[in-house]
Image (cartoon, rainbow, N blue to C red; front, side, top):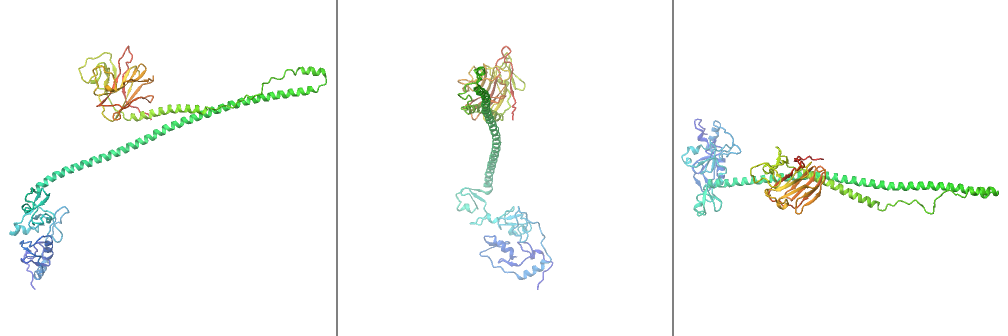
Length: 541
């Protein structure tokens, strides 16, 4: 049997596909030898059957048989020659299509063979003249998908009419009149569109995440509102039940006192009657005893003492009358209704004030809008009349007719609340004004002209409107709260210390920003000199 010459090179016994020593070598009709497994796998991936070495095409798949001599020689040579191992391919890299064992990383792909090669299996393409003419590119995965099924040519172009990847032959046939561009050019266009789509998707995701957060915040606020509503309800109903219990106690006490008075009257009358009965019994005994006397002298002398009977009242009618309870329950219920109405208003106002105080805003007075007579504190929280007008630069924002000042802050939506101390003031104006008010002329302050204000005037509180609304002034009024719901068109005023609602203007129409407005009015003969002070909210439990 022939033996393998140790001086022969490894190339004589190596498969040109796997570059390893032959395993079950077979010969193609063109005379080239390959491992059976290597050539079988190679042809399984091809549309047409050709030799990997000389690229000769076969009309049908050749029926291959093992070359016994070459197989024996290769078996002997395998014991002395081995192909060095190389690193395995990573999951993100293109594998070598020729490796039969552990697949190695491909370094090039052949657009003629449509096979990707590792550095070892690429060697024939760098050595054999015919293979050197093949077009090698950077490693590509799934090369068979890059081949036109109709023309067996590389898909290098993109048809803009049918949105298909085509080969050069396609542009000479079915796509002759269609606009085509290189794949790279269309890739760049589509990548730009994809980037825009990705940005839009991210924006939509961001918007929905914001929506989710808003919903969660709404639920959180709703829970807090529900807890507060329950607490307020418990407080109100507990107070009402306490009032009902007090009314019941008063009713019971009144009925018991009436019954006790009747019982006392009856007891006194019974004692009086019993005394009369005792006196009459004694007189009856004397009369009976005298009636048995036979001595005329003694009888007449004793009878004389009987002429004056003991004093008694006319007892033909009973003088004790049962107490009448007619109307008692009704009067008690009327009193309860009055008490409950007062209590409910007090509780309602208290709860309402607590709620609006949650919308407190920090506002400061704007010196650029202050009337020339007004003097503002450095922190912008106080204002009073200085007595004389100072010379100031002409400012279109300054109020020059009415003695008032606006805040730096304005509000164009939502809700806001602030409090102003009016202690020791005899005249003042408070409220909000539109940014568009006429600040130079003497126009009446009404909602129509852009003012929503409450005024202390001649022991009355007046909401300036058309017509004005007059309200009784509490002597103890020291601090006024102002609440605005811009979206609902609501302006409300509160007596903060007494925790009483004073007045609400509803159905207001606001146009543009609203500014809190303060007017300490004029100081006359030392009166009304106290400042108006914007105070921080001090909520009570």
